[in-house]
Image (cartoon, rainbow, N blue to C red; front, top):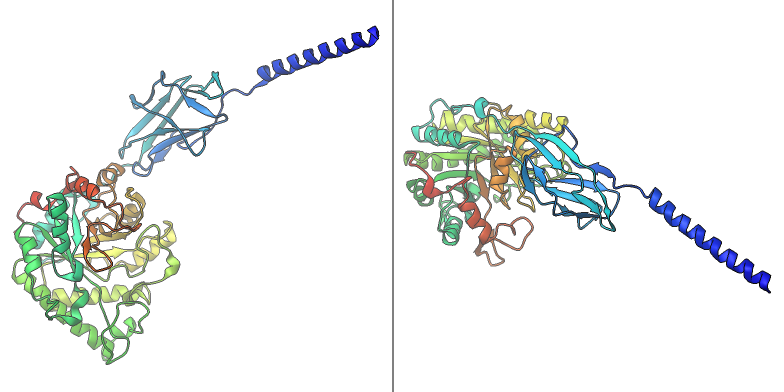
Length: 478
């Protein structure tokens, strides 16, 4: 019996010794804190507006040592642990375009949350941001050599502020009033610098509810030093003799036939052009220059989040780029050379694909009417965020080979102007589409992904931003 007790005691002691050895081995062999990856590589060049943080991924659940300062170009920043992955440390960044940066992470800035003695090694990352736009290549004159003095003044003003400030703008609801502009004023105490109107109801004008011959809204805007822009949702009949019904690409209205003399489609568009010319002539006679944006969104892909597979949205784009380009050139020739309209600043809208590729850039360039027909290139963006849009901006600038100003010709949520400029974007203006509720009454914002971020507070921030021009800040360009 004594023998068995001795054996039992020996076995217990042996197990204890093995357990101690195992613990020692765990301590001796535990992996140190190791950086597995970083979101900005040493020597990288990044976009300022789209790079808002550095993510450092470690091999343990990490914690922040508040006693150690992490710096970006010598300025302290406050790292945080990524709530979605506690092994990631996020260092927030507020970057400007065209700047060299150094992020310094001293030894011990972070540690293993389960073992305070296990700390991170020192880390230094040097990188740069891509430079902003150089406007020295942008055309200094309008394409129309006979442009009115007022049109020249407006263009010069836009060029002067290009890369420095953006003009605030809103679209008129029901095409020919200042109601949405008035709503912005009642909310913020400031009017937008630019108001947009639409010849969408051309076939009904003049009428008691829509009469483009009444230029009072545009005159009111211009007389108060605001700028005026017009676009044209061009409605056509599906077949000869039908009621004028749609601008959709689903219509059987044939752009190819419309560009062929002797067809009913050609007669129709020429009559419409003459009618539009008459209204634009009234504006010219009143000394009002017009930022003119016809044939918008021809390809149907208005922003980075669109799909090239959706096809054209409007009849002027349904047969491809060549016919749309021909129609643009015909419209330019008729309005400028036939009807003598010299008060127009011509804005062409490019469509930006889901991903920027050289192939699509070639397609967009093929659709471009040409330097002799375009003053400014616009991009329409409806996104569920207010992030800067450097990719879209660069794409549009590249289509014009840097020779044309670029503008945010339509938007829902307004990209934050300060972030845009810090990113190197230089949208000449932003143009917010009007909002209405289910009863057709105007709202400043709606509960919709495309507009909900344009809250009253954000509108106040926009209209008081140092980067945004409002109508009260506009000089007389008469």
